[in-house]
Picture 1 (cartoon, rainbow, N blue to C red):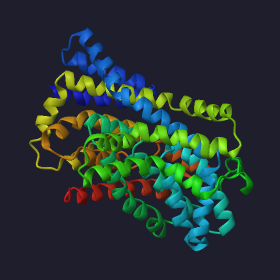
Picture 2: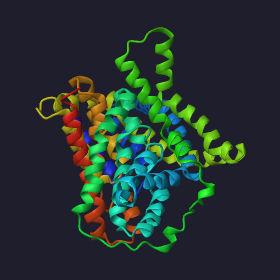
Picture 3: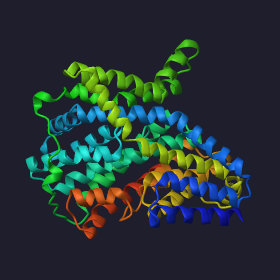
Picture 4: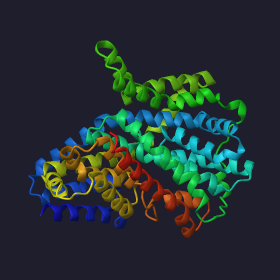
Length: 438
């Protein structure tokens, strides 16, 4: 019976989001209520589970997503993203422009939400293509592959951060493993893939090319831009590596662990960035704070969707559905990582949203993480890989790409969808290989 109830619940989630076009947050709450009632939970207990799930999920994420949004917006509005692009192209040369924009997508994408990164960086792709004479699609796909990978694999992005919290995964290890898996996935799905996909001539509309381009005098230095954008990754990775390879105790252990906490790393970076990309560049404090206010207002709905997924997860646990599914899935000899990837892929294909796919899958496979001994960090990455698979007409990213590059549906399927699927498959292979060594 619990299997029937969860199946009907997921079906209801699909219908509410795809057919009724209901907001995902409301859909998650309604599905959680329905599963709770179907499992015979007392009504007030259902409400308490929803409150607990929302509270436990958002307690950590509000800080990390809020600070991450502030930093990403500052990197964009200060011109640092443009400077990183220009600097890398100068370093790698015109012949290796694809590698340069791919690195830009990765560096900027670490702290910038996908849709924001897309809107900021795609006009730069248009500018680079015009200057170099290279194909738009051949430049865009490596950059967007890097953006997609950071969105699906790496904290502080919403889905991987929320999954790490749900699975009680170490955030530093998740980030390091994520980078290890991300590098080959980006290379395969970006520069390598562009050599094999059909040649498509993109003719972007003029209105999408009007985003502000900073003059060289307005830009911060390359070193300033790069170090500020990467500082949270540097702090988290430094802390994790030091604590892994050196047996520190007492005050040094506390200090290193404190600095490597994602919230503290982002807070320190925002404070540093406020000066290096703001005050030191001639902006006043009010101007920087307006950037931060606008950034935070843009993530409200993301936080609500994650909160709704947290409430559904808690209902699955408290109603006994998770335990039942966990026991059922343990019967199969299939790798828990592959199970997580498959479920995320199916939900991604059905719903479209990578975030919804990842968070919904987390509630289903949570018992596997708790009972099988599988690495929670690798499960985050496996689900993240599945959540990027098979993007098509029900995914907002599909339409962003189609409209910005003025392609038809067939051309978008042969470029964007192939790239996203390549990332999902490459990511899974990387996770399974890494699982043999940790």
